[in-house]
Length: 392
Ligand code: 3PG
Figure 1 (spheres, rainbow, N blue to C red):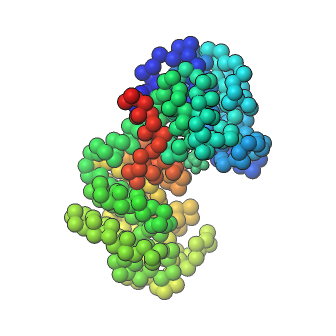
Figure 2 (spheres, rainbow, N blue to C red):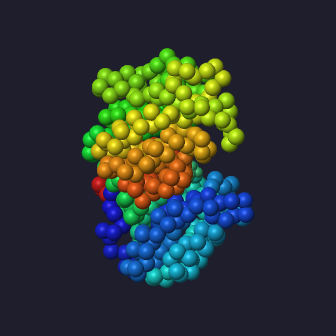
Figure 3 (cartoon, rainbow, N blue to C red):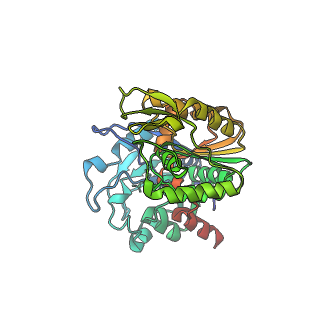
């Protein structure tokens, strides 16, 4: 793809599609602003070079054709202005132009998903929006798995289409880990359901040297290996699939390391009493809520010997202290490892924040769904269209 920093943007009208879809509380206060922070390098680059900068993003999943106050990017405009130390005007109706942006100025164009045709990637809308700019920049990695008018259509019609700084960094880091990794490549896939991660598990099982599963996913794998898991969360329908993945890894001489000891309780609650037991002692009413200390040490060893680590999903209910030990040990092993590590997904980011290892992870993706689809090996439409433009 063409990169923003390879272009001369001075005096140009630059349109940046960012992913500023940040979480807010009920009063509309931004509770987590990583994505806004991550959009700054592209915006600053353009401002420093004297471009007239327009930035847009979606926020949530608003009703088309009407702007409800809850869906407004106003809080984002305020936060962005604070970060850039300059005012950021919010433009409500912008698709047809009629607003002015001076060189060195940045405006935020209101929630692009409110525009009719955005979600459906309407051609006419994309063409109209493309006329607003000389250079179109896609910096919205978090939305790269969506073909919408601002993430896909515009890239076809703008005079120049390129990847922003964040988009470039995401493509480089994730690409390096998956397509040119230093071996051994170790993937950790945790979380509650095999069903939501099945494609990722299959695609990774094809690439990695070692596959670690955790959480409810590991429970289904335990079932597949003939263990009793009591009342633990699992998906018996997917035992066959879990078996196939274990066989794939076994054929390559790297058996999926399943828990040999676990932390169980009879309920998932802050008051639950946790017991550390052998996997062979799980009772009929037990629920497995974390890996046990012996297993955690074993997983940490695998991580310590990795050349590259891909991490998505915790191995236990780490939100509760009595079931956090496994994920904490794994997080610490990743932090101390010499390997290049990438991590992504909401729960994983929460674990990274909780265990304060953000500075020790090689690359933390801003993508949720997009990160997962990248791991699945899917072509992300917003990146594909930039590649097509670069090739033509
Ligand atoms: C995300 O939060 O994963 C992205 O901003 C995409 O949002 P969406 O799932 O509403 O398209």
